[in-house]
Length: 121
Image (spheres, rainbow, N blue to C red):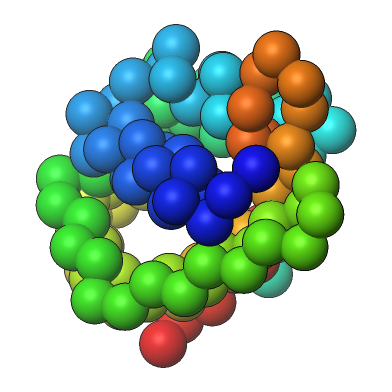
């Protein structure tokens, strides 16, 4: 439950987004996930996984510009600033995005995201 372990989980998430690796995303996203996208819409884990599976969400590049990690007991938060390019819903995009993620540590499963907010930077 250390900051180093949470940092590793965040970096695994970013790599899974780049790779479109649904198996790793399935592992890192909690079933109760609630995320607010840069469009202000509310998304669940199933929405995110379905978008990657169907190819409607493709990340061509994701470059981390800044990252802060905070751990308090079994709860963690990551705050990332990233330059992202890809396709969403069939439309190409490029953006600088701020990701604020809340993680919960679960024995036997490690760090999993329970909430996220993605905003234009």
